[in-house]
Length: 186
Ligand code: 2AM
Image (cartoon, helix red, strand yellow):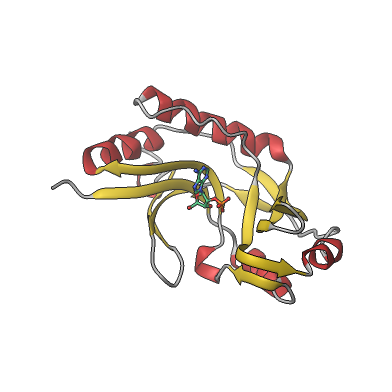
């Protein structure tokens, strides 16, 4: 039986940015806050693929080149409804270079035969998820409306494998691109 892998492509965040985000967490009823290991910015969700397809994905990601760019945290937001939130997130800006990189990845994934992503790309770092009712989401959003961080440089992106566990998802980094060992193949 072929093992299936649940994959996505994302940016890892610098330790000081993760520390900053962890510092914001708390004070919202019903929130299941992400842990340090779970914080990331998704560029392309892939979903379940077999190992052969995973190899194709790795090769395609390996071929992507991009100019490093800077981003910073900016603001906080909510998916879902204020009374029935699905998730709280931190914004990252500017959006253009992130969208450009996400588009390169999208093009590469479609070229190898994955179905096109239908959702609009909204760069965000998920901070909390909600299962049941919640409160104080409005207060969290108001308090973090002005969230801002020093910029950091994005030079690499990562292919993650997601393991769904009872305690929450475990995100295992499988490979990072461009591969540092293959910067110069001459
Ligand atoms: P989220 O944080 O916005 O939920 C691993 O599951 C990552 O892939 C998460 O960051 C999650 O985004 C994202 N993800 C999960 N399912 C997705 C889907 N169907 N479309 C887009 N992104 C998805």
